[in-house]
Structure formats: C-alpha cells, structure tokens
Length: 279
Image (cartoon, rainbow, N blue to C red; front, side):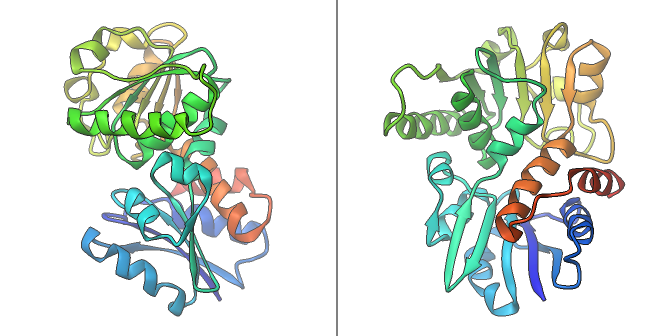
C-alpha cells in the first residue's frame, strides 16, 4: 500500500483525507493507495517527516503551521517552493524528500478570471500567504500584504522581493506591506484571507483590516478558511454583491495538483469537490 497523508497541528478538521480518498477511488487506485491525517506538533515535525518513508509513505500534504518547516526539511525543492519560501507537498523517493508548492497554482485555478492588473490585498504572512502573494505577483497583480505582526509582513515582502530580483523581469508589479489603517482605507479588486480568522465563526471585520463597504461591486473575495459552510467573510461578500470563492475550492485545486505529482493521473475534480463538501 502506498500511503499518503496530510500533516498539520491541529489537523482533525481537514477535509483532505475525504477528498483525496474519493479521488483515489474514482481513479481506481484505492486498493493500492491510502490517505490519512496525522497531527504533528511543530517540535516533532522534522523527525516525524523523516520517519514517514519507513512506514510506507510516498508523499504528504502539509498544512498549518508546518509549510515553512516543510521546505526546510526537504532535501530538494522546486523553484517555486524555494522562491515562495514554503511547501505544502512532499514526495518521498530514493531516500530524498522533494518539496513542492501547489498552493500557488491552486489559488490561481480557483479564481474566476486572471488577476493581471488587479490591486490585491493578502491577509496573513504564513506559508499560504507567501504562496498567494507569489502567485498573484506572477499573474501581474499589484499586491499589498497585511499581518497582525508587522515584522512578519515585512519579512514576507523582503523575502519575495529577493526571489523576484533573482531572474525575474524588472517590471514586475508592486509588492508592499501595509498597516491596519492603510489596508482598511484601500481600494482592492481582490482580497484573499490567508489567516485562520473565521474558522471558529469569528467576526472578520473585528479582527481583520477590512470594512464591509470594501466588498461591494466587482470585488473578488477568497477565504482560505473552510468551516463546514459559508464563513462570515464569504457570506458578507456575497450579500454585498462581491464574487466570493470558498476555501474548499482552493483546497480542491491545490489537492488536485498534489495528487497529480504523486500519481501522474489527471485528478477527478468533481469527485474531489463533492467529497470536500461532504467532509
């Protein structure tokens, strides 16, 4: 049996096992492949990952809070994962740990149209936010990043700016960090929540630097949080006429990219969406 898993802390809420198991079933691979969730505390992550191949694991998805650590533990990585500074997909083969990042293409695939020319606000500064900001800059969007801890925001912007400077065009769109007040006063065509706000039903307008009025019109709102239904942010965005993309769709798209890496098969997106919704 070829074993796969999602590694996180906590991880019991993850829809990835149901989603990926449904995909393996639809592809006729369920008798040869399995997928499970493993809770790994941060202090045990590196050792836990290195031990997985001996237990029959051939790959793993990585979620909060391990995406940056996943890149560090890898023995080799894709250019995208290196530039982003985080990985969400690991592959074990021949004693090597290969890291990739499917969060970036997953986000792009979930958007209703190209982000080129858009002014985007990215909320958060963790591994997912790094992937989102990197992907949007690559798509041609102007990106502003906010995080509760300004030092982390500045670090994200500084790291990505360095990666873009190493071999990317000089005319890349702007990437900048913004304060709470600047973000709340900004005008954005795309807002992506990469924080955990909303997972427990929190009011996003109390904890995030956005105002309900910023969601009106042609704005696209992406909430990476998924909590068994519409999050407060998604619900408010839809009520105000914005286009809202739920975290489950991003989960499906990035999971599909991971599955393609491991199996080489074309992922069954409809089966994955249904299983992700059903939990």
